[in-house]
Image 1 (tube, rainbow, N blue to C red):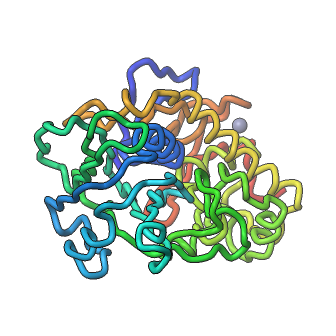
Image 2 (tube, rainbow, N blue to C red):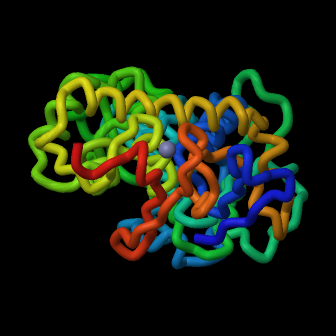
Length: 328
Ligand SMILES: [Zn+2]
């Protein structure tokens, strides 16, 4: 992951970093912005400019085209970093087909752009969906999946019932989730998240709290940055074993992570349109102000102790050695 420091940061304030990887708040902004542009539109055509970007599609290009062509987008949903466009395919075929969705994972560099129908594909455009006028829409548009590093992908996948019987994620009313995302836990921005149950699940783990926070089967969408920020806010060392923590402490960490993400959404605050206007170069992802991540050697914003860094998996953990003691 590349981090670029935006010049206005100083040692006395939070660090303002722009990542080139979409984190949960970016994906949520894309989801909400996309909904405003594509709901009610019909997919008239699909063009795959790079096969690798549909590598998870059963049956390849022809099956993708078969599944999505002449369907209407009825919802734009998200769980963790998995986003999906719900199609009315079951309706279109008289209920003969199972419910389907176009699953989009942005990976490390993926973007979705709404373009005019005559816009040329950029060098990194991988998949284009031509969306015609829906009932309330006037102009046809292109929905372009642009992905420089090609870790992302698109696939038409069946929807399966959710384990808990609640809505599949943010942005959908149906208790359905893409089969490829069914193993992923709900994320901290999901209104159907059972916070008490998540606390219990975390406290049942005998591994380090940071490792548990990053486990997508326990809670989705918490990456390295948000884990470090949430642990710092809760004044908790990442190596503390999850099963030794109090209920209240685990709840505090989760609520801290929620707060950090909500702040990023608010600060990012940028609309879908302005985030994704840049065609090349700038990623367009949020700048976010961070209290601990990337601030090695700078004073802790609570106690002025220099922030430390430790190896964690093949990444780093950032923490305050005084506020976040391993043994208490
Ligand atoms: Zn401190």
